[in-house]
Amino acid sequence: MKNVGIISVGSFVPERVLTNFDLEKMVETTDEWITTRTGIKERRIAAKGERNSHLATKAAKQALKSADFDPAKLDLIIVATISPDSNFPSVACLVQKALGAKNATAFDVSAACAGFLFALITAKQYIVSGMYKNALVIASEKITSLIDWSDRNTCVLFGDGAGACLLGPVSGDRGIIAEYLHSQGEHHELMQVIMEDRESLNTKSKTMAMPYVLMQGQELFKIAVNSMADAVEIAVKKAGLKLSDIDCVVPHQANDRIISAVAKKLGVPKEKIFINIDRYGNMSAASIAVALHEAVEHKQIKKGSNVVLVAFGAGLVTAASVVRW
Image 1: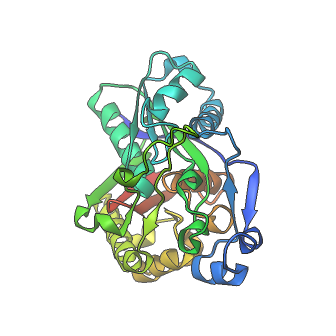
Image 2: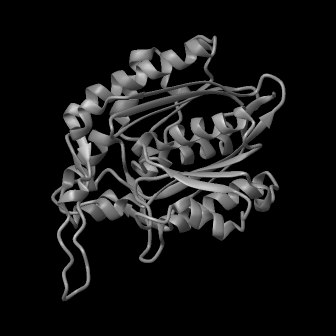
């Protein structure tokens, strides 16, 4: 069969902007402290009542509109998220309803910051197998709902948003030509949200106190750099390419220091790496999906470009894909 490739992309971020200067009024921190350690200047925050599924649907609609694709013809919808509207039903099923994609199979994937690539690679396999002809892959996060806004080590990092892409058969040598997935469960405690620790239902207010993101940043840094660099090298080799053949790298936007360290380790010029963390912070699974759309919009990715997508996240999990655009 033909190769499977990305036919169109889309993204959506909430209107509300939370700057570092805003955070200075909320927690003991400074714009300089945040910028020098993370590269983040601002992030987007979902409005009250603006759910994960709302963000996901808006990104999906943009991707479908770009391809002039009828939602009723969708075969598969996969949403990557760790901040769903609820434990069940899945965000994917809510998006299916919102789009009117009544013929699509829909489910969620949980792989934290690497979720978009786990979902992308999963969707590709369904199409390669012949089970489905097309797939809509969405990464959507309202991760700020999981943040302790009194913890300056985590609250400065994250933002909300969603990105999407439509997959299907493509002609010529285009398409997703190589991929790599890896998990290191032995390091699971370095970043987690422990659901068992949430407080019992308060019968007076009818609310439940939810747990927040816990992260051991220094320990994560070295593992993230080595894991992402290794993933890029493995995926590029599987694609039959050299690092010098890569035109653009779209990494997970976790920390500018991590991105710079990965670039240095690989010997890839930083001008080949697309970065938007300064404007959005870490949007977990949505980071790469939004960055990919912007890289295409800014023409950093063009027809024929060799592109590497690479991510690292809680689990710990790592993923990389090589795409010939």
